[in-house]
Length: 107
Image 1: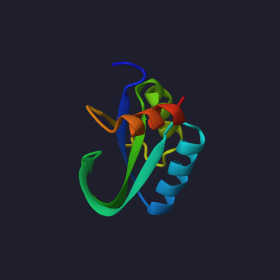
Image 2: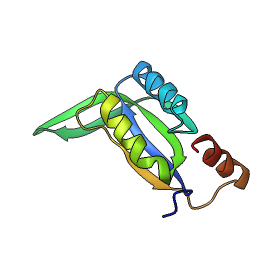
Image 3: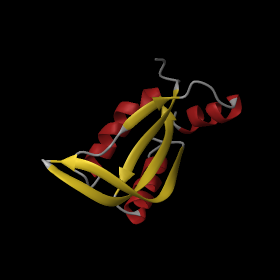
């Protein structure tokens, strides 16, 4: 994958306040061009042998593939979870001007 390829990265957070803080810093550090903070949802998962049911919010992060390793390292360091969800999905197609904007913002 080219460093200029655009990715959508998903990352859950425990609260909207945590999501807001992380989103602002990701954009400020130019690790992301844009971050959407989706409202509360209910997550079900097993962690350390126990079933959990927790409220969470979802970050939808737009970045370039060339910034992904730095974004992942930054999130791992600043995220309150021991093992944050960090899933990168390639963007197959999009508005050329929007994709160029993502690339510019994360250059």
